[in-house]
Amino acid sequence: MMRICKSPGLAAASIAVLFAAASLQTHEATATTLAPRKSNDSGVSVNYSIDATSQLQRVTPVVLQFEGVTDAKGAAVRLSTDPGLSIQGHRTLALPAGKKTTATVLLVSESKGLSYLHVFVTQGSGVSAISVPIQTGSTAAALKPSGEFKRNARGDKIISMPAK
Image (cartoon, rainbow, N blue to C red):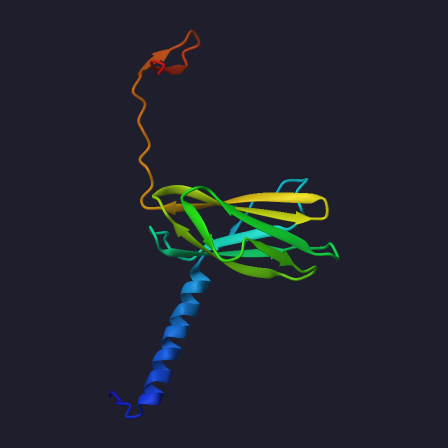
């Protein structure tokens, strides 16, 4: 049995709740990537996720999560991009000590291909550099080698190709 709602306000609220639930499920399904760390970095862990497929001249949100700020003065974040990718909004961010911080960076791709969002985190005297890959358009097909297979004295296969 189907019920018809005669109150437009209640119907709109019901639709809004459905869209909010769908949005929440989509956001939870987005996987975050833990950026690799080095022994001499800033000590701040960085996770990132890209919630949409990057398209030319369209805004692509990148969610950055920072955790592990231990310096009482906090930490600083500076953002930059490769040519062909631009940031809408602030390029710097202050991270408070002892708190997990989430920031959404809005990027616009101006050309097809692979570009990077560079995230520099400074805490005390340590600096971390993380590059987040942003693919706009389809991935480029890998070129097949045009040389011929030969074997060396040990029997290993070698591709012999002319130098360009």
